[in-house]
Amino acid sequence: MTASQFRQPKYLGPSHEPRHRVRCPIHGFIRFSDAERRIIDNPLFRRLRFIRQLALTELVYPGATHTRFEHSLGVMETATRIFDRIAAEKGALLEALFKKIPVLAENTMAKARQICRLAALLHDVGHCCFSHAVETVMHKDSSHEKLSALLIRSDEFLKAQIDKSYFTECADLIANLIVHDPKTDRPQLRILRDIVSGQVDADRTDYLLRDAYHCGVDYGRFDYRRLIECLTVWHDDNSDELEIAIHRDGVQSFESLILARYQMNTQVYYHRLRRVYDRYLEEYFKTIPKEEFDSSQKIVDWNDIRAMNHLMQSAADSNAVGHPWAKRIIERRHHRDVFALEHGDGFPVLQRVRKILNQIQLEFPEVDFIADLPDKPVSIHKLARDSDQDGEGIDFPMIDAGKKVSLGDRSHVLRTLSKSFRLGFIFADVEDRVKRQEIAARCRILRNQ
Image 1 (cartoon, rainbow, N blue to C red):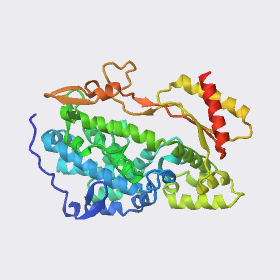
Image 2 (cartoon, helix red, strand yellow):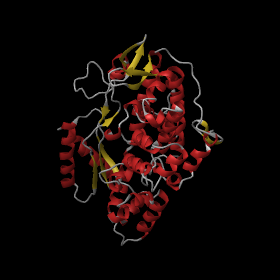
Image 3 (tube, rainbow, N blue to C red):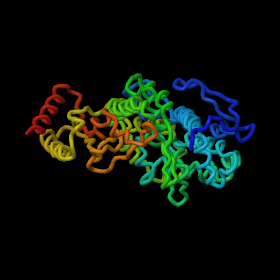
């Protein structure tokens, strides 16, 4: 099918025209409609104003006090730009595919664009306080994505408002873009899911740019405008799905995204001090009775303000169960790193480091040690290359002269860049620098033996 001339989708009615705007340091003005404003003003979404994007990272980078609220608005704006760019080139193809979903048979592109915007806006609505830092405690075996989908699908929370403001089944379609449910899968909407959260997605684009801006670092910056301009789609005739692809002249922009992600991970998201404060938060919340967050409503009742008040009270009360962890956070009295894995270290080295930890605990019994030695490495990218042996990579399509080829194989950067790096630290509660250097030196000796 030939490329279609771009036409801006019509809005679903007067209440869906973008009459409002808010200024954003990353994207300039972000515009939204009356109907979207009602969702933004909903208490469930409004609570994101009081949940910081990067938990206690401000204790390392003081400017990192931005919130999930502004990030969510930014993801909506970025997702819209990606949708409009793809529609500019493949609008007719998109429309023909979306029409196969009965509820999208009329006002097809307007509805598709709207559910894409809303999925981007609401993708983090289920985040608990301190974002990812205490997610494993509060959500137990679940995740913030699953809670977001539950809140959107539930009449008790957002479903009734969304379906009334937009159209029947709108909330279910949005939730399925956030968490893929095979039972209600609409393969025709894979492209929208990829726009919100895929290999080149609105979520990743916004958080890299926004986190870099607020942390005051340059690592996360890349030419995202050029990257969006180079996006297109590839139609899989066998599955009847569309997937995001990139034109050949966008390879360098894509590579800069991958490098930005790698550098932000190593320098910000997995900074050694951020890791130790995340550990304190996790241990502190384990001391809170489980019935405090054993339901969806109880989880969303928590925000960073309530949590910080809880921490401050525990820090001031030496009899509080979580007092030691709270005191460290409030007074910024943290363990210091005495050993760190090299990024290229494999699992055998990790096992050896665990033995090193046992040895130094025996040699320095008066010192309190904390280990941060996760089994899984941190992913940098998941793009397959012809030379890959494990078969775990995901082939990202590049369009060259109208043909689909593997971006992972064509990119020199991705051919040489590892898919992941290994993170690991040993921390010691030692303020004396000489003593700390002694322990660090002993760790190095044990490693080299």
